[in-house]
Image (cartoon, rainbow, N blue to C red):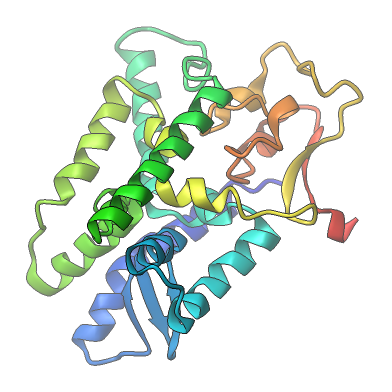
Length: 275
């Protein structure tokens, strides 16, 4: 089964929803309100786990409203893994388009024909160390200052807020410059760097897992070595992993691109609970 079209479709829906929610509110339809920092859907609050974590550290307590807002994203992550990152995140939707443009420029301008997206950035230990250090440091500073520091650098949250401002005021705030900055760096110097090494939401969601959580699994008899000389699964992985041997790494976003790219059908989605 190929997942690419389904993934792009869900990403597109979530991206357009950023604009649809404030548009509904403009017409006084309030069944769903908020941004991707925190949503209210029919009276049910759902918040980015990083927002909840910062609020907990800043206030020194975990209240019932905070706890209830965490239930849904934690439940989804426990069942589906980082499905938000791989299938829903509006920034990854943009990042994928930027990466396609980057590859096009490399082929047409610099005449580089071989895949280059991820072999330049593979080092999962370093990426995990940087991103967890970033999450811990940002959370600690937020707790000490009483300010949600990480909210100011949440790419999906900023995009959603900017979409709301655009719909209601036909303008953007200065925060859009942050997103444009990381897009520019990805296009020119640092491929996929934000999702791999800094995104607080993706980092926290990667910790919410169990033995039953959906993951990418290898059917190869020798999963420590690639099954094809092209190593096509590594070339398409947005997290710079080598899926044939690193599918259980905390960086994996369950996007399924490696499964689609595998020429020998040796990668699949797997959950112990469905075995």
